[in-house]
Image 1 (spheres, rainbow, N blue to C red):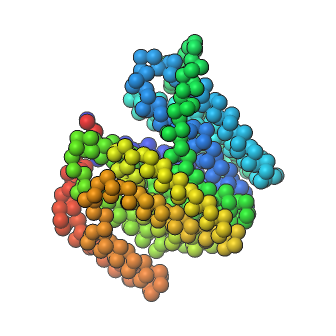
Image 2 (tube, rainbow, N blue to C red):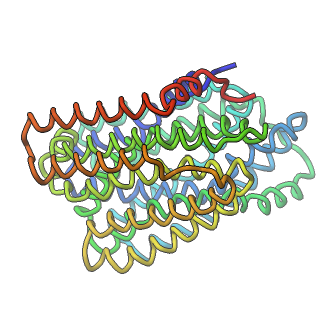
Image 3 (cartoon, helix red, strand yellow):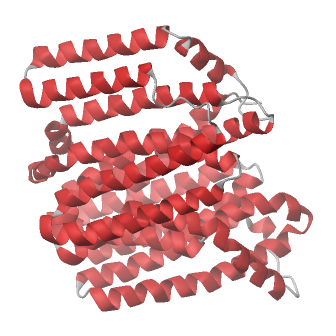
Length: 470
């Protein structure tokens, strides 16, 4: 049985492929495109991220839960589930097309339409990939991800060589996603079949899907709705600058996604064995805090260099967004652990309440601030929204695990050290190489001392050696 460390390795491998297709590709495109075209492309991709969640509406999660129950007659379940997804996809396409008709024109509208189709194709792909995972065919799931990575790479190479226009590029990306869907469908071909009398099951699946879909829909909307508001009120250049930093943040948040995939089944196993997880969760929170604060310091200390290396000098203007977005890294990484506590304790409703509140705060503040104060206000609104998210998650988590210690001496030391190094490198002694080296050494020494005390390193080694589930 795989250990936690082994699970982290495999989860990292899969996530890196998805990171490449979802973020690295767009960083490369930013170097090849004008700022205006990249802004419109980023708008379309952001729109598709919202549409994917609505079109899927939790079906890819629901099949993982339902498949064991329907394994003997899984063809009937899958055929009805796919039929339900078609109905939801049509409704989703109509909803987002109406939004485009009312709000955009020209290339904005045309790119948006293509990305709505892209989203529908993606929703079916992730559903079939969920089927591969629940059938324990993870190697085939990875295979389907590789297919998309290869085809996207070919599209980017063709774009660089032949200098397609914006619409041709988006059509190429849509073609790559369609090839992935066809390949994934081929891998799942043994699970398809036409069954009779499934209308009742299809309606039942649609009715049940709300509990699975609402949390994911709200969770993505509160995190990505700001880009749509920027595109409505400001313009393509502002969208490009905003998304240039946001793409880097998505790369840095890869760590929290990996930890979420691994820790959820691990903590679930501990919780349902009625083990006391308070000490373990407190230790894990410290580890996550050290990693997220390290990412914060790295990005804020070398923000201009990173932006100019990944993009072009034009994007150096986006450096003002780095501080608030880097704070989001710390808050969001911490929220992953607290959210997992609510899931394993069967308090998913608290997560729905929390993300719904966060979405409401995000919409209200972004609609007020972005038109008046620009993209910087949108980044700081993200900080406020994630503070609300963290605060509510912490409140509900403490109700389930009262002895949870989030505010400890170690965490306070981490925050003080992080704040001190940030001020030294960004305000008191900027661009001083010797001070930078001294701060790096000081940070490493701080981490070493913290990990050696109070069994922090011992517990980490024990966690990595334990079985992931079972």
